[in-house]
Image: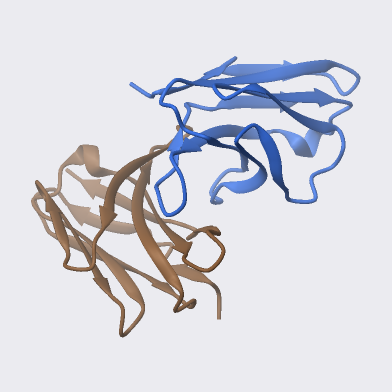
Amino acid sequence: DTEVTQTPKHLVMGMTNKKSLKCEQHMGHRAMYWYKQKAKKPPELMFVYSYEKLSINESVPSRFSPECPNSSLLNLHLHALQPEDSALYLCASRTGSNSPLHFGNGTRLTVT
Amino acid sequence: RKEVEQDPGPFNVPEGATVAFNCTYSNSASQSFFWYRQDCRKEPKLLMSVYSSGNEDGRFTAQLNRASQYISLLIRDSKLSDSATYLCVVISNRDDKIIFGKGTRLHILP
């Protein structure tokens, strides 16, 4: 069982919709991540939060908007997405530098 | 040279055989190394960390060769359930950057 929980597991949305992906961890990890993964590719970093502050934004389009309400929660707000944004969105957390990432089970997003 | 390189495979290996694959990295400041396995349409799961002295977890052995800048994963007595993509992850000591390899696909054949 994963200790990082993501909801929903699957999401289908139109290009004009607004939706949010949610991630929760109770391991006390202070760094949380959003990754995007396309088929047969490695995860691609989108955002990093460290101690609830956005520390890295990998030039992600503004139609993706992250939010970290507290140390256990991470959201990704989606608006006006494109079909090419369809992918597996992975949340991850870790204790600190040089420690491994722990991934949630992901949200499979389809944009129609 | 790419930061982290893996042979994409697929490696098609009969059940019960031993299989090994490597991951090379270019940044000598790399400090931490991990192997993940990822099943189709699932999240990556941490398989094992890789320590300087090498480490073993059941049928799995991970090794680090700093001089040649590669890590390896050896799977003994392979099972059908070992079929997956194995991702190598390298973390830089200098900036804590996390780099994923593109993964090696393994198919265990009955």
